[in-house]
Amino acid sequence: MAGDLLIKGGRVIDPSSGADRILDILVVDGRIASLSESIEPENGATTVLDAAEKIVMPGFIDMHVHLREPGFEDKEDIETGTRAAAMGGFTAVACMPNTEPACDTDAVVAGILERARKKAWVRVYPIGAVTKGRAGKELAEMGEMRAAGAVAFSDDGSPVATAEILRCALEYLKSFDAVLIDHPEDMSLSEGGQINYGLTSTVSGLRGIPRESEEIAVARDLLIAKLTGGRLHLAHISTKGALDLIRQAKAKGLNVTCEVTPHHLILTDETVLETAYDTNTKVNPPLRTQEDVDALREGLADGTVDVIATDHAPHHIDDKWVEYDYADFGISGLETAVSLIIDKLVLPGVISWMRMAELMSLNPARILGVPGGTLEPGAPGDITVIDPDCEYSILPHNFESKGKNSPFIGWRVTGAPYGTIVGGKPVMYGRRLVL
Image: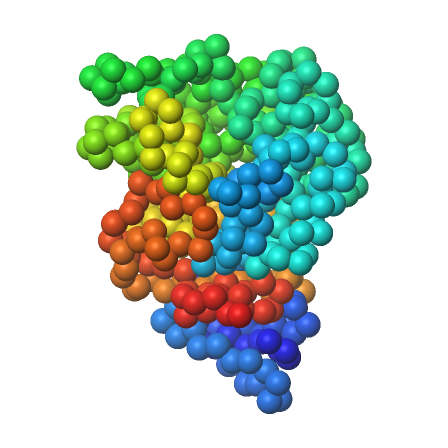
């Protein structure tokens, strides 16, 4: 769409300014130009979108997504993944480096950005690998990847292998103020595990993954972060013990942030039995207990948790339609996250609309150091519009993602992304992609 964009009559919620009121928003040349109680279009080229009875927030940023390209395009690619993001209300995604080849050089970073320039529906921010080939033995050329456009660094899919490698990486990243995102897991405890260690694993006969696998890794990471003073972000926290360690570290002033996923905030390990071993419940870290879910929700409310991220991990049906032991880990989450957070957390009063915007927009932008997270004049025209009253059923044939692997199939939810606007251009509006 050419020309300016005017969004009329929405309830604007902006955590960067504390705004929460009915406003019009004018976007000119891809940036927020003004906000006012009444703005009229100045010329016929202005596109006007009616947002009455809708909620308007800074564009959501998912800082933990697996787009699978290059190497695993049978599961997802940049085009389908970003179409899914647009439908899910996300204006930007940060893609993890566990591709083939791994995103461990400036050439791969540049290739992802070039592909995104041609095919992506939303902004794409590559995350570079910490070690070459994600093998955990030798640091990758993170400085070169940063110069090519990588916004953060991780060996996600695996933890940073050793404390020494982690120490060196955090020291190195301090030189250009980049954040290291670690997947906290002690592989010696989790190897061969399928679900959370406990009563459910005992009843099912499936090998369990103990909480300590995550908590030992979190403790290690926090100690190395304290030693180096580097910026550490801990991915997909799933246990009460891990969150308690992070809370204590923050109280001591460590430069640490963390994220949780919608599925760890909603589902428990009992879901595995309740769904008759639906392999779509198989995730890493595994679904934990109700005590852990309650603790994570408390962490959302008290500020310990910084970000809600999907850990979008799409898979081909052949990777999931097998015995539980042999199924791949992961959930396709981009198109369900916003609705699930609204239905299960915002509407019941666990968190506010303002806190949702902080967790899904402002904080991801600040942690990654990317534009967005605000609707202040001069900011990019990246905007998420929500219909809080929309009721619908989650159905796989409606997914834009190649991955239909969701444990939420058939769930009836209230609240949905209604519009996704990137750089002042609607890419999804009225719950339909804008071609």
